[in-house]
Each structure stands twice: as structure tokens, then as C-alpha cells.
Length: 347
Ligand code: DAH
Image (cartoon, rainbow, N blue to C red; front, top):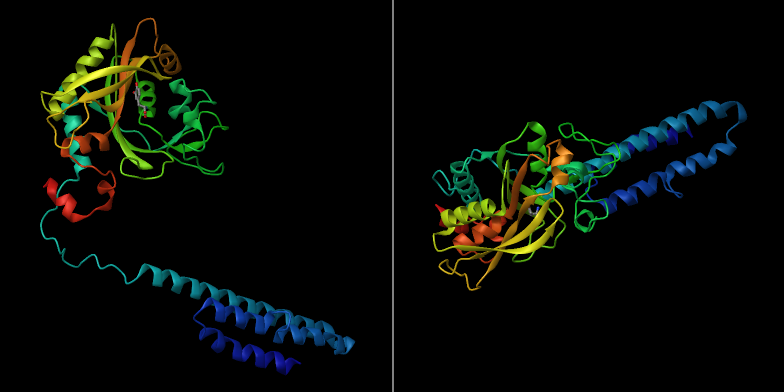
């Protein structure tokens, strides 16, 4: 029996090394350790081994089994690695010269983001950034958005599993979940918690929502958020700033209008529409562009600003929508495909 074990172990490495597919691997595994396998057959012979030899024999069999299992594990890992390598294709050589010589161009979303920031800096705003991984507190609770609000629904929002940990983002309450931020409004809270009013910040960045992608929707898109906190801030100030921004970005003929709406962090709240008939491909009289309003006192309370003293306005809008209007792009997916023929048009 000992000789049979030795023979088995002697031939296994070469045979396993020759395997290249999962199917062959499974067959080989069955031949060795399956119910009708060679090692299993040897184990079944233990009953016939004289009693005094059994402990030594048992030890040998266990060692052989462990050795064989280690070889099987290594073989499966090797086949798995080869499958991944085959899927990835040949390695990329980053030292090869670019087929597209030259310094490259700015992405249209970067162009619009930078232009918006430039326009807002001129109006006294400071550009700030917040994390894309957020906690429910910054994304919802501090923005007055209660636990049963539809925006918090798992169908609309990407939550992380309970066990996820993010070093830079601290939970206020151990029970709350991490999520990919659904809007840049979370940066309003982060900015206000950093210091006392008055405050004037603009924050562009990526946001994430569960959405199937089509010509006008993407699960990952970009927003730009503004927050202004001071004394005696009114809807007229908000309207004036929006008029100034859109006239600067899209041309003096651009008009804006407000429609009453509901957002939990502003009261009153509005949706903003644009009229910009002079732009290419604009065939609608009014185009919805974002949300805005007067900061709700509940939000000021959450960050420790006295709502009896301070007032403010906030707004948020999608950068893709703005870029599509400005450049006459009719499908949001062009932004993410990185087709040089598209990108070169913004040189
Ligand atoms: N967060 C809103 C959204 O993602 C947009 C928005 C509405 C931002 C009103 C604001 C606001 O700052 O006051 O749809």
C-alpha cells in the first residue's frame, strides 16, 4: 500500500502541471480524490491493514491526502490566473508612443466645470471639495431629509455593506451606513461645520444614483453645488446670481425662471428652467437645469448656525446637462466613452 501511495504522489505533479482547463482539472480531481478516485480506493483498503500497522499507515495516507490537496489547490489557482490573463489580453506597454501625438485636450465636462468655477470665483465664491463616499448624516440627516424619504431608498442609492470602513470619513452614529453620495449637497454640511458664517462656497464633483443609463441618464454623473450664507439673503439674490451665471456661461440671451418645488433642505424651494434658444440643438422653450432655494432653518440648526441671525441660498445642478446644452451634445454617454473623435472637438 505504501508503494501505491508513493507511486500516486510521484505521478501527480506532472499530470496536474499539464492541465489547462477547468473541465480537465475537475476530471483529474475526481480521478484522485473523488468517490471513485485512486486515493479514495487506497483509503478503503485501510480495513485490510493489520491493526498494529494502521496508525502508521493512517498517518501516511493523511500526509498524502494533504499533499495532493495542496497540489490540486495550486493547480486550480494557476488555471484561474490563466483565465483572467486571457480575458485581460496582452499587457499594456505604457512606454509606447501615443498614436495621437500631442498634449491632449480638456474633457468637455472639465471645461464646463472650470468655467463655472471661474464665473463663481468672480462672484466671491471659494471652490471646495467633499468625499464621494459619504455617510447618511451628511447626505441626508443634516439636510433635513428624514429616514423614510424616497431619496434614501435602496432602489435609488448605492449603500455599502455594514462591514465597510473608510478611514477618512467618520460616522456620527455607528448605526448609519456609508453610501456613494447621491448629490453634492452633502458638501454644504461639511463646509458649514468647518467654520462660522458668512460663507460662500461652490463644490463640483461626482455623484451616484441607481439609474439605468440612456441618452439622458447615467448612474454616475457630475453636479455643481453652491451655498451662500449671510444676513438678509433673499430669493432675489439667488435669482440674480443664477441669471449672472447662465448669462456668463451660455450667453446674454439666456433667461431663467423658477418653478415652486420641494427639497427638504430649502424653503421655499424651486426648480430652475433655462431658456436659451440661441444655442445649437435647443428646440424647447424651457429646459430644467437644477434645484435651488432658501436654506431651511432646520439645516442651520443641524450645523450650529443661529437661524434667527443667518439666512442663505443654495442650488445644485448637473454638469452634464450644462455641457450638453452648451456644446449641443445629444447623448450623455459620449462623455464617458473616451472616443478621441468626440474629445478632439473640444481642443
Ligand atoms: N440636491 C438636489 C438634487 O440632487 C439639487 C438641489 C436642490 C441642490 C436644491 C440644492 C438645492 O442646493 O437648494 O437634485
